Every structure is written in C-alpha cells, then in structure tokens.
Length: 618
Image (cartoon, rainbow, N blue to C red; front, side):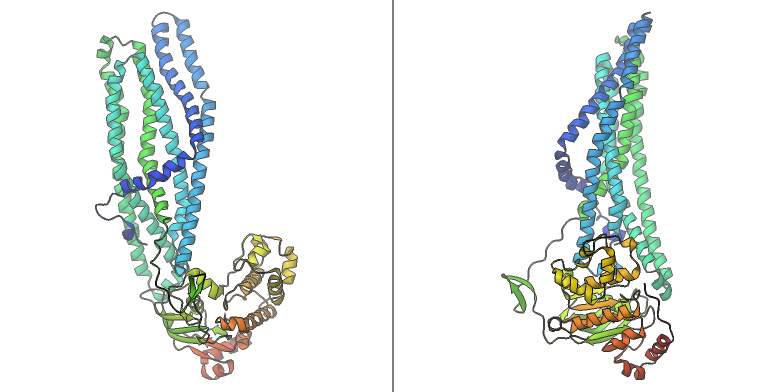
C-alpha cells in the first residue's frame, strides 16, 4: 500500500478523529486497572510531599534560621529537606512497579491485535499472502508495539511527575506567599495552552510520517523479495524509481514533523523560562508586598528544581511520545477493524444446504479435478509472463508431474492452482468451481499444497500431524504414518505425543512429517511442490504412490481428487499418468513415452536425469 493511498484526505482531521476513536478504549483499559492507578497515585503523593518540603524547608532555613542568626534552626530545616530527598527511593520503586502493571498488559493486547489482523488478512485474502504480504503488519507486531509501550510508559511517568510535583510546588508557593502565584501561574498557563494547541496538528503529522514509514518498509520488502525477478526482467530502474518516491515522501513527512516540534519548543520556552524571568523582574514589587527573602528563594527552588523540570519532561513527552502514541494506537484500531460483511446473496439452487444455511456449492461429479483456462501470470507489468495463455485439464484420480528448468514457473503454477497466486488473466477451476472469490476455508477443504520448505512447529508430533484435520481418529493417524513410512521417525521422536523441537529435525524429516499432515487432510486435491526433494528415492516413491492411491479412491475422485507433483527427478515423471513440460514458450502435456517423441526439452531433461547420480537421503 502506498503512502498516498493511506494519507488522509485534504481537510481531514486525523488527529482529532484519532482522539475520538481511542478515548473510549483508553477509558476502558484504565477503568479495568483502577487498583493499579490508586496504588500509583498513593506512591506519587509521597513524591508531592518531598517536593513541598524541598522549597518550604529552604525558605524556613533562611527566614527563621540563617538570616535570623539562628544557625542551628537553619541546619535543622535543611536536615528535614535532606531527609525528604533520601526518603524518595522507596516511593520511586513503588511507582515503577505499578507502571509495569500498566504497560505490559497494553503491549500484550496490541501484540494480540496485530496477530489477529495478520491472520484476518491471510484468511480473507489468501492470494495476498504469497507475494503481496502486508509487511505493515510486521511493523505493527514488532516496531510499533514497542513504540506504544515505551511511549505510554514515558507518558505516564512524566504526566504523573508533573501533576504531583505541581501539586506540591503550588501548595508550597501558596504557603510561602500567595503573591507568588500571581507571578508564576499566568505564563505557566499560557505556555501549556499554546503547547496543547499544537498536539492535534502534530498528531496528524506523526500519522503521515508513520504511513510513509510503513510504505517504505512494504516497498523495500517487495523489492527484496522479488529482486531476482527484477534483475531477470530488467526492471531495476523502475523499482528504484518507485522506491525513491516512497523515500522522498518519508523525508517530506519527517520535515513537517520537525517543524511542529520546533513550535512545541517555543511553547516550552514560554511555560518553562518566562515564570523564572518574571519572578526575577518582579522581585522588588514582591519585597514591597512583604514577601521574604526565604520565600523568594523557596519559590525559585520550586520553579528550578521541581516544577519547570517536570513541565519540560511532560511537554516533551506529550509533544513527541504522546502524539506518537495516539497515532500508533489509532493504527492498531484501524488495522483490527473487522471487515464489513457483504450482503448475503439469494439462495442458489445449486448450493448444498445444511440446517437451512448454505454451506457450499454442490460439487460437480463430471467436472475435471483441475481445469486451467487461458491462464497468464507475470511478476511485473514490464516482465515476460511465466505462464502464458496456459490451458490444462487434470482428470479426477489422475497423477500429474510438472517438469521444466529452474525458474520456468513450476512453483507459480502450483500457487495459481492452489489459489495462493491470483493470475493476471484466465480462470482456474477446482472440481468445476472457480478458485477466485473462494474463502480460505473452502480452499483448504478442496486442496492441500506442500512446498519445498516444510513447516513444522513446536508442539507434539500429534498436533503437527493433525494440524489440517484435528478430528482425525487415532486409527487414521496410525495408517497415515504407516503408509508413508514415517514409523521409524515418529518412534525416534518418542511417539505421537512426544514434544517436537523443529530445530532437531533434518529437512527430510520435516518433509516427511508435512507429507503425513497433508495425507490426513480432508482435501481431495494434493499439490507437492518439490515436497520430497530431501527424501531418498525410495521414500519419495513410497510417498507419491500413497498420494496417488489416495487420489484414486472413490471418495476422493467423487470430490475432485488428484495428485500434482512438481518433479525434480526422472522417477517422479515416470510414475505419473501424464507429464506437463513447461519450457517458457509452448508447454507440452502427455505421457512419458509421448513426450520423448514430441518434446525436445523433455528428451534433454530425461538425458540429464539419467546421468545424474541420485542425491543422498536426509
């Protein structure tokens, strides 16, 4: 997604809108942690007492002690101030303990939101997960969740410090001389007001900056993932130009954000420096009003050591961390908003209905397992198509092998058939029904694709094997393990209930477990995209025979069952009923014997395979 596509429309108020959207969930979050907030306030009140004593004790030490000739009294008041400073350690420890009780649950909640959003995109748009993945979700899951946690923690600390330091300082100024408030409060309120007026515009600038940052991450990620295709197609200049535009947009938004930061600095100067200046300028008038020298010294102490440092920290946090927090949390709100459900269509007479609810179109018992009609697909507008007006029909129960040179489009074909790659033109039918517009769950019920890099996760062996079909019986699990020859591996791992560590498995062992998982799935169509390349020839032959027999059973054939193997060995092509040869120009489709006569490329591959020693099994 480009930055332009995600930027707010002219005249929009994304900062104010973000505030309205996020205030209700923020209130709910804080309302659920009232006890934490009460404990945090209690520890912070002790900090207010330390602030009050700092200025008040200094004033009393001067007026009642040193200036009155009572040195002992002055030292006693200073000792009280020192004791209050030394006693600030336990309250600060309590503050940070309660802060963790606020920040960590917030971070965990945002991580869960980011994961749900990524899974929702994968389910609602399975084609996007292949080559146009939402890399912005990765940024939300990693970088932006840490931004929220750090910004929220800093904001709570600084706002809390300012509020309770201000309470202690203002009570102290009032106790010393009410006239001091007349000098200190007006510039303080003016500076804070100017600062608050910049918050929403700065939030808008911060949002534009993050939009541009995500666009750069997504653009660079796409270029990195497809760099080999870009070089092969000569599209480096176009990719560099598009990436450069994204970087330029990010630079412009960064400059706008810097200008608002400069205005924030002006507001900080008004609130942070003007009170001290006015206090010094009005000192003669204050003395005439009866304000003592100690009270003036205490007022300067309140300003320079407590109030103004806390104000500076708070305004910096609100101006930077606060607007950043508002924008990033709003992005999580946008990212996790559930999609608007489409209007339900009128019932179709061909739909299978269970319990009055349409569950899916009744499969045709005469349509081929797979039918590809004039499919064309390229990896860029200026690159040649890897599949060009391809027609292919795979009969029910048939075993097909796909062969061709590396990079010719074999894996792309597997992605197109499985529905993970959307073709530029043409139609793909599974069991007579188009793949386009099919939900991820329906696709999972109709086909299973095992890629070369087999996925195995930490958990029990049983959990891994039943991942695609959790309701499979123990007998079905045992049969799948046996028919694919995986008993020695499962026994070595400790049985089906043993905990599996993926790091301890070889590539071949991963593939064997993934094959068992695919065999147990309910999908009738199986696509093996070099899914046996790390197995020895005997294990590969056993696996392909098992899947071919599975596709040929009456139940699988009735549901459009078939086996498509992207082959990397001659033996896989020889075992197939028919072989598809992709050569980049005119694909050939036929039996092994027919292709030896009609396809020069197949003859070359046949000769190469015959003279290549078999690889050592994993």
